[in-house]
Length: 271
Image (cartoon, rainbow, N blue to C red; front, side):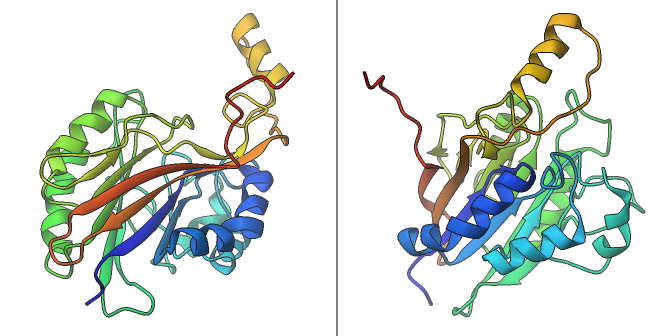
């Protein structure tokens, strides 16, 4: 058995700029951090909202093993038939019965004899009132723990309190929980008392000369005028936000959690 497993999670990929950065630089990050398994949130990869089959295959070709989603997973209806055929393309598990696609899976970790479960779940605070994520989490954790103790959760939620509550709720029953949706990386990466690697939000992979990936001027008009304006994707200052988790296959606990921003932000003014 491998001594430990390194998992890279890539925060919400926003549009073509984010996709291209993953395509050009993911292999470098995998080598640098000795990554065994890559998960990426792709719900905003198609023009800033939704995903399509072409993008799915581009991300797989770049080295992503599992693509998770969120409240925009269903934004582009043409993906619906494909969602029913690809178990590596996830959407939140707690959408009502009958929704297209898969909410979790158990996957082989390449070049090992180990498996990892990946669960996609969505919060309800300030988001659509879908099924209860906590009771659904109880059900899926019991099911996947029969196959592996390496369990990774993408909890796609708006409210930080709901993400933190879920972290405490699954501590000791899962290896890692990453929060997604708000596109801003948080500075609270830690390991909870019973071994869960936790961070409230991984951030986004896309253009940071923007407002959450959106053209700045358009976003400012929406706030100043309180009226709708057509969504326009930004394109400059593209960065990858993610989290590296070092997991112990013997007990499923997280040994280390390391947020990354690539390239790093400038934090001093150079005259």
